[in-house]
Image (tube, rainbow, N blue to C red):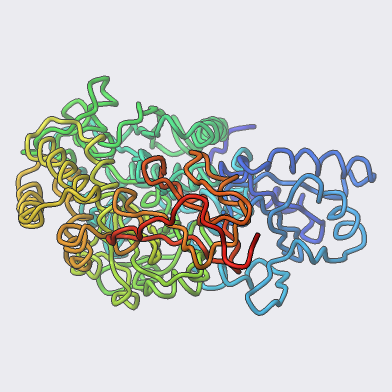
Length: 637
């Protein structure tokens, strides 16, 4: 590809791309993000290529590989344009029917459509409730772009914001536009992006750096990964614009080692941008020069912290340092360095193109724009959700997520990753923004959102996240290192029935000390899962300690499985299914569980026919005395 030497050449290149495309020509876009690839997406793609060739449609139908469409619960997804027919859970075996029916005869394959709770089939992607209630400013282009084809991004207006910044605006005007927009960092802290840029720009020294933080390590969170996989050019363009405003000539993208597809697509995108003159020396024929390198992290959760991340890029151990001087002033190699996460950078081109007022009209007074959340857990429609800031939790969980998947009642939602808080049903109408979540005892974080039902033990939930953070702590500071270990030991004891009076007071004291005295954000926020569950679910802690009972029936050491003699039909299903051979009994005899052998796996409860309901799960109560071995069921010989 020849280098573009001006904004007008970029504009002409876009016109040429569009002129060569027929909007009426059928095109199948396939979600081939990591999730859909894991569900057979590559086989589906190959099946489309082969079937289109077999039916003589080569040159008449396009097949486009795209990034994540967001509806991960129903992947792999295929959307047939121009009608935008959305097919869910597509397999390679479905492809011949899609090609012959939809692409050849323009007929719908109804069995692959979304079906609502009312039984109604929905044809078009934007009418599916999961998508209908979203505002996909960042994620919307994922379904239209092949991340390995820069032409797809440019056809949608890509790099026009960069051209506008370089040739119409001064660096100061770019910075002012971002400040006026109210954009705040999407990585967790929510610091005003424009103010951070300004601090780096005004810091002493000519050499400055800009960095993309793609070290997303929260359990269940994959927002940044999906943006990098599906639309890497949006991040690259935002980074170049930010570097231009700050005065930086070099940037880095710090990516988790566990994101190979994101790295691969990003690497291709960077090469294509350089080939077209959109990156490197004299970008678009201007005087501005800027380039980007990719650094793969070693997988440590704590490396997402700014000073730890920069130490890792420098080749040192990725652990935090005291920030007597902020990294915006003294970061990489002691030079002023601006760090924002993937989603923050991806917002920049839209702000420059559409203006600060457009962006400021989205969201709340203190939290502008949209936010991407990773909606997972006990919810029907898991996936990536992008909504305006201030959207109530209820709308996200029920209107978009479809409600609780297990048939049980909603219990809590954890926002903000492993350091976030757990909010009860009373907070379902809470608007999701930085300030509201913090007041409720949680946080925005990078955007993780885990939904829990009434079968979830909140004490065990706190224990899980404390264990994760204890393992991921770098161990450099005493409050975090020792505080998490001690907290984990107490929580493990409570879940095992060894809780003692005074444990709750000690946990609260540990949490307060860690919040005040830890070195970095991992330690200062690590007590949030504990403190929030104590705030809203204190009765569960008290039941574990005082009654040796788990109200949710989730803590293994506090539950027992028992066969109710009056209900047992001696069908022997439970005995045959028990992996520990802990159930005795023969035909016509009441079955008995040997508690000394029982591993509390729950298989007996799962396999017992619902019409019998002979297996009971008991928590915190003595197990009824077992019947004598060989006792026969009344009426059976």
